[in-house]
Every structure is written in structure tokens, then in C-alpha cells.
Image (cartoon, protein in one colour):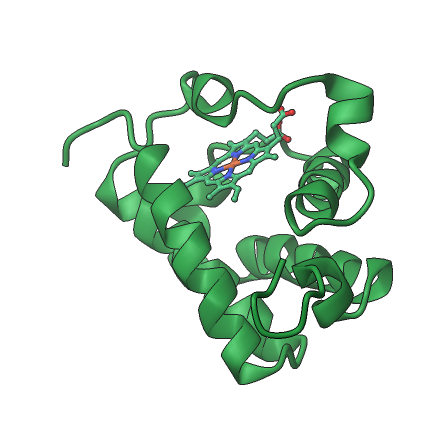
Amino acid sequence: MSEETGLSLYEIIGGEVPVKALVDRFYDLMEEEASFDVIRRLHPPDLTQSKEKLFKFFSGWMGGPNLYIQEFGHPMLRARHLPFAIGIPERDAWLACMRQALIDTHVEPTLQQVLLESFSGTADWMRNQSP
Ligand code: HEM
């Protein structure tokens, strides 16, 4: 919820269509860009499910319909990421991929910053390797 407008991030970004576009672009970039291989190789060969899950998670996390929790229960994100070795290079690649996806899908620049700041905290918390 934004303190200034009383709107949720989901409403500010424009609802389901832009959230889906962001997630699709994020995983398409991960597929296309060699610099994201470090995280692409942790994912399954077919990214359809990954897209679906991240879209459903973002929907609820941004204050829209709680699709992920309805289907899969509590996200327990850190626990769900424990099978994957995530250190600083993986964290930074995830954030760089998301930053590019936000640019490519024309998310408004101030909103890009708000989202990236929030993702940064979550991505860092997901680290289970040092460095
Ligand atoms: C820090 C770097 C990160 C890496 C390397 C990473 C990697 C992965 C991998 C390999 C999967 C499994 C994909 C699949 O089963 O299809 C996954 C699932 C997921 N990730 Fe991440 N992730 C990272 C950060 C994040 C962040 C910051 C968020 C949220 C803001 C996030 C949200 C999710 C969600 C919702 C799922 C689906 C969980 C499930 O139900 O299995 N991830 N991630």
C-alpha cells in the first residue's frame, strides 16, 4: 500500500497484465542473456511453471489477488530456495535480470525503484552461500 495514494503496488503497476508481462520478460531474459546463465542453470529446462509461480507470488505480494498462497500455501521463500546454491553472484544476477525486465516492460521509473529496493532485501535474504 502506498502511503501517498492509498493504492496497492498491484493497482499502481496496472494489475494482472503488466505483472504477467514483467515476469515473462524476466524469464525470457534469463533464457536469452548469457550473463544470466548463473541463475538460468538453477531452473528447470522448461520455465513455464517458474513463470506461473512468480506471477502468482507477485500478484499477492503487490497487494492484488493472493493467488500463490491460495494454491501453494505460505511461500516460505527462503526454505523453498534452499535446494539452490545462492550466493552473491546469483543474488546480483537475479536483481540485474529483474532490473532489465522492469526497464523493458516500461514500468514507471519511480515504481521501478520502489520494487527494486524491496526485491533487493528479499534477494539478499535468500542467500545461503558465501560469497
Ligand atoms: C536471489 C536470487 C534468486 C535465485 C537464484 C532464485 C532461484 C529460484 C529457483 C531456481 C527457483 C525454482 C524454479 C522452479 O521451480 O520453477 C525459484 C523459485 C521461486 N522464486 Fe526465486 N530466486 C531468487 C530470488 C527470488 C526473489 C527475490 C523472489 C521474490 C521476490 C523469488 C521468488 C520465487 C518464487 C515465488 C518461486 C517459486 C517457489 C515455488 O513454489 O517453488 N526468488 N527461484
